[in-house]
Image (cartoon, rainbow, N blue to C red; front, side, top):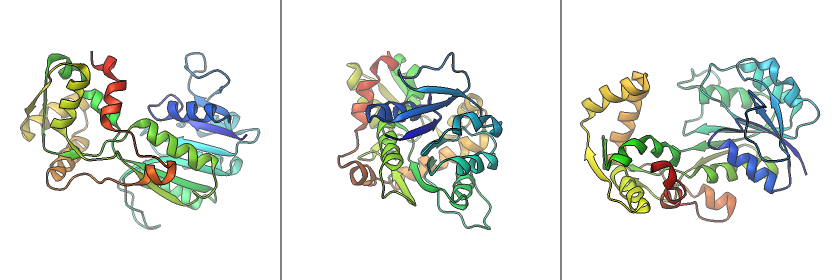
Length: 278
């Protein structure tokens, strides 16, 4: 049994990391902002801290932590966080995204690359779990699903959305088994499905018809910028979705190689989340 610190324990992946570690008999410590309001399984030690204040992690890292699961929430990068982890732990598993490797002197395009580089230089044993978009992002359609029509751009864009539990279970293997040091695991779902097909599957699992209505990219740009408040991010998403109409999002065998079983399907995710769409 080993003690693992989970940073991001209440996140859509982190909560599954915690559950899987507990099921495996590991001692789990969770970094949370408010221990009183955190919903954690019985036996999990909650320690308060905040990544934006690196020194607040000291209590969570004190006392012998073998490994750390690290999720970065999009706040400015704090190099001291990685330094502190390296001072107290043996290995780190970082939840990243589908990014190319970054040379030591190359500027980072997104924060994931910068954190990966800090970890590579830290002296820690490390594994990067580079996840394709989560299946849970489909919850952004929930209000439209309830209305029976999803208006969105690029209905033919083929996505390989991944179930959050698959991401978590790959991360747990890397935290608790040997043989994963230096791994850069691109984790995807089992197949590429078009946006419109994803919506159809959600409707089927709900037992109701949900129609797809193609939204012009220029209209989507305005609506999503107003909703998300980040024009650059919206533009990057539109470019990616357009590219997936020509070349489907990648599908890898990572889940099967690491876990010895096929990845969970989007349909299984939709079935588990029908209550969220009602």
